[in-house]
Image 1: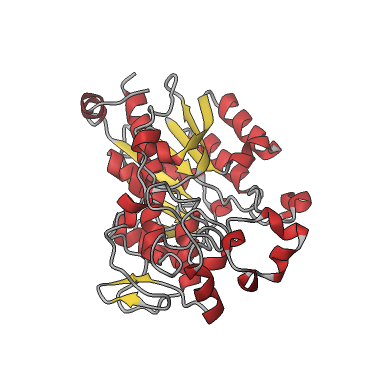
Image 2: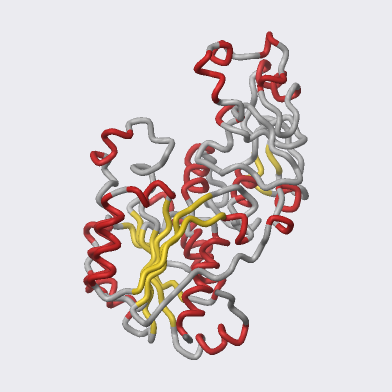
Amino acid sequence: MSVDSSTEDKAQSASIGAVDLFCGVGGLTYGLRTAGIDVVAGFDLDSSCQYAYDANNGKDKFICKNIAEVTGEEVKELLKDFDIKVLVGCAPCQPFSKHRKDKKHREKHKDWGLLAQFGRLVREVQPDYVSMENVPELEKESIFSGFLNTLKESGYSVEYSVVKAEEYGVPQHRRRLILLASRNGSISLIDPTNDNAHAVTVRQAIGALPAVSAGGSCRGDSLQTASALSELNLKRIKASTPNGTWRDWPEDLRLDCHKKAAGQTSPAVYGRMAWDETSPTITTQFYMYGTGRFGHPEQNRALTLREGAVLQSFPQDYKFIRPGEKISKKAVARHIGNAVPPKLGEAVGKSIIAACVH
């Protein structure tokens, strides 16, 4: 589905309000707001997300609460003044991720049932539109089938597919399951905005950011800070080329595990990104050199926190910590890596707006 400015203008004659479940630091909310949807509140149990969410999306919109304890009446009250009501969310993906080691016992994960809580709120609120984002592996799980049944039994038209984030302006290789549901007829995701020839590259996204050394930071932006490297890892990254692997290193730089058969299956770790391609998937560990292809294309270091955020399509001035607050790289990187890329959120928002006038 394509969308143009006239469609958006028609939709804006009716007020559209949304509530974001599992909102984190606000990636999905920011994208919806960019598209033109008024997000009145974001719910999340992690209080450490509150500053970033409110600082970028409106004061006092973050509600720290377990989704299992949120009632339909509470959400209805938040949306009562809007003509069109929207409920969106990205339930924690850890139980379903392909990177989860304990796959046989994933149903015992503490977050397994949160998608069912999302479904409960859909039944209780009966919003006009629903959207959910998660990892592609969720599609194979029984809890996703249950969520689909909840939507269909409640009278929703449903569409879902695995999308390529780079086709919507996100400068990284990221695959996500996007679901859209409507009580007002059919709905579909807008057509891709970027084909392969026009995907946003690493160079276009972060090439102009200030240079920093391993262990260094930028005075003008506290998030433009890079993890320190050991002397050995500094030698390793100097021996690495964009899109190369540790197999290119001299024998004395290789890890013992890479000399074993089991270690031969992970060539991307300790790798450098390439300037003129999209980045690999930004995980919660992108700030560490040895956890993936997270070496800077040119500088001898891993990605900075700001670079990871920009590669997730957050704007360069997005605030993640309070002024003067001591940075925890692990905490900020977790928030960034777990976020819905704002550009994907914007595509979802434009899709809902387009459906409003059809």
